[in-house]
Image (tube, rainbow, N blue to C red; front, side, top):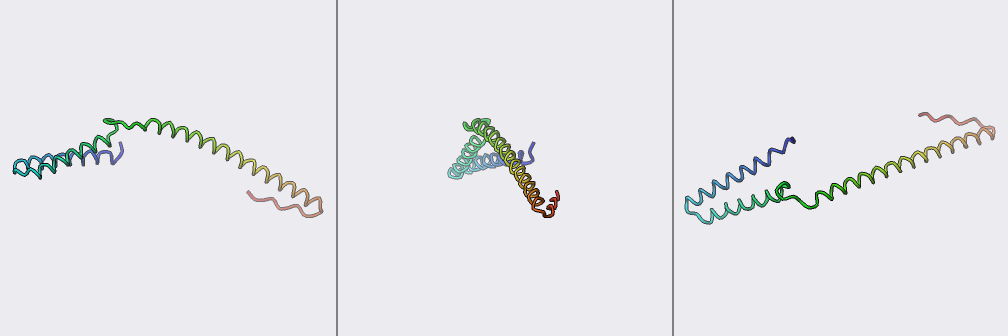
Length: 118
């Protein structure tokens, strides 16, 4: 369980209790506008809960996003494999070029080039 997963339900519970208490207090004091504000806050809190809670009102785009993520991951894996293959080809070409250059240097009567340290 995540650390912050309990924070928002507690805040929502406190928000609801405070607004219910404020509604009861405003009704007891015969303050209709005050009571109406608390009713509006309660309805807003319920609407926010329904929008943010996926188990109550599931979003329609959740499943395609998961499939799209899997397709992107496969594409990324193929791209990384292709890049690795090209890098290996470049390295092989560089080694071959260095070998040819060393052979031509020796054929001209020069000193063989120093081996690069790895």
